[in-house]
Image: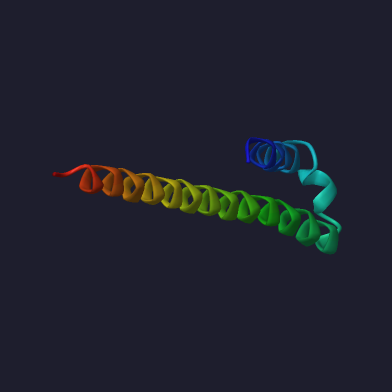
Length: 75
């Protein structure tokens, strides 16, 4: 996820600073470039959501395991 976000940030910086004059005469290149940047950002967002769901699933499994251990040890 860090690599995808780093690439997206670098692409935004390069596109806004160095390639801005190049994009003036070529609207198709402009659109494709920024769509690729948007794709990287959305990929990072979906990876973050997936990671959050994995953490929640792991926490839920640990909680169930602990509850099972506690309630089976009762006299």
